[in-house]
Length: 236
Image (cartoon, rainbow, N blue to C red; front, side, top):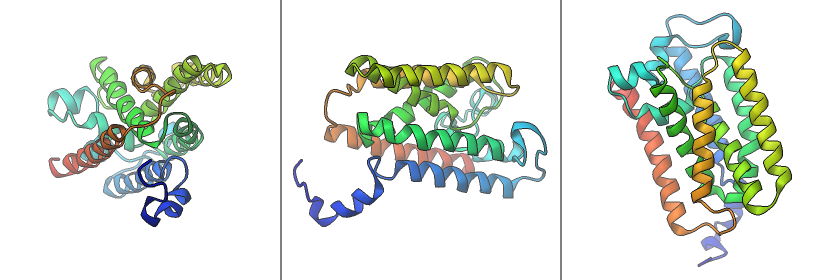
């Protein structure tokens, strides 16, 4: 608003897309950490949804969450880092496919800064719900993914775009039922992530423009996420 040309950097930001490159950050960040956990692992899983996945020791070192790391080891920051780790090839491919579908739509409605805030809040609340439920070890981008579903459901109600909200709710319900049927899926993280995204979206009114404060909070969320991963590895 202060400088529409962004001091000559506008074309660069336009190439990043409506989400200012956040989808690429998530995609490449999760891919890099998945590769790191595989290289650090002493053994790899060979079947099911966790095929070619890292071992438990590796994901704990890089920031998996749950009652074991949070309550027994005091690694509370893993509520953020766990969303960037995955337990297998199918796990990360499935989550990244949905992130690339939902994040740009969420950014179009709420703005890129508030997308990051919603994503981070969903991760924290989702993994907090899973941890409090007694799940020993949990990880994956599906918690913030369900948060994006929750944000889109609220946007449909708030803006009157019932089709967006209805589709998001249907997809979330189908994936939640899938999680109930498929073994090893953290449904508490999914439910908590959906609630976190819905609650964050309730506070971040999609009918209002983003503010400078939203940008600052988004940068804090990104910095806190990066520090959570660094802290996990450094304090392992």
